[in-house]
Image (cartoon, rainbow, N blue to C red; front, side):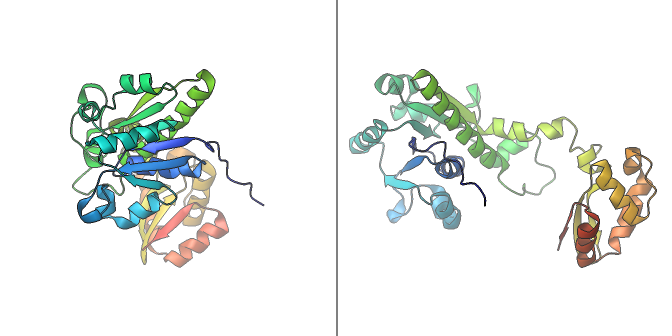
Length: 294
């Protein structure tokens, strides 16, 4: 029997004003950890959600907001401000994703909030840190800046946004720990450009560059064509590489063998002659990490 999921944030009240993906993505994780989550959105057109995600992808919006309490308030009005501050008085952590200039216009600068609500913590989701905080940007531009956009194809997923959501939930956990240890609120910033830079570290280290072991130089860690599709092979460790070589009839003499052009050619020929079904069976019988694709 599996143990029950941990709920370390049970009793913690999180209020989010963050739209699009990183803020709601963080709420998803915080709710899973037991937090009580409320999101305030601006009025949308014709009664629709004021979060752009709710308009261009209702399915994603619905999944991210499952179990999240929602309120609509126009923070540019006195009534909206009154509603916001009523919620802030009973909030532990506030998440925002406005640029610094917008925070000032809404009266949500940290110094003023901390004076009014000493126990409140704040997590500010920004595009980029410091002097770049006012720059416009999105996931794609942050990935491009981090060197994670190659060619003309769009990235397979929203890496900076999803990484930013993880870092935001981590920042909330840090804020709660500080509150419990010191009895007062704190402020933190999470930059999506920093999330992209963190995800780009393996590339900077050379691991995923063409000359790197997991960038294509190792014959046991590549995507190959097979008879009726493709196969992602991840036989990186010596014992997995040895099993792949044995199956392909390759004499393996240490890990250097896996970097040789002849080994790449031999593995390519071997896999090209196999069907996806045969490769799935091979993986099961010989304990080789691979995954077949159409």
